Image 1: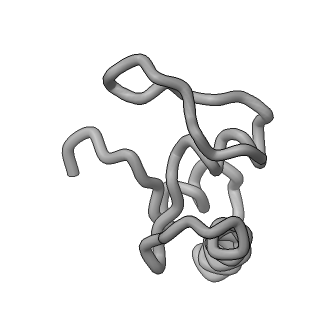
Image 2: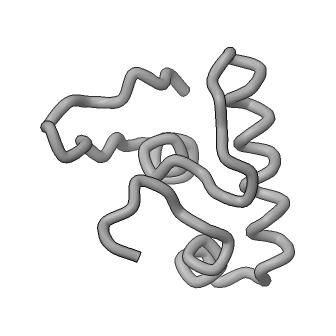
Length: 72
C-alpha cells in the first residue's frame, strides 16, 4: 500500500511487538475513543496521527504539513 494515513493490525503488531489479535483490540479501543469524540473511523485501521498521539505522545504532520485536528 502506498503512503497510507492509517495503520493496520499487522503494522501495529510489528511496532509494539505484540500479537495481531492484541493489535486488533488496540485498534478497536482507539476507534471507540474516536467514535465517542464524534469522529468516523475505519474498522480494522487506525489513523497514524491518532495512534502516535495516544502511544508516543507526538503528532505526525500530514502531507500538507497541517497538524492533527484530533485532540488526545
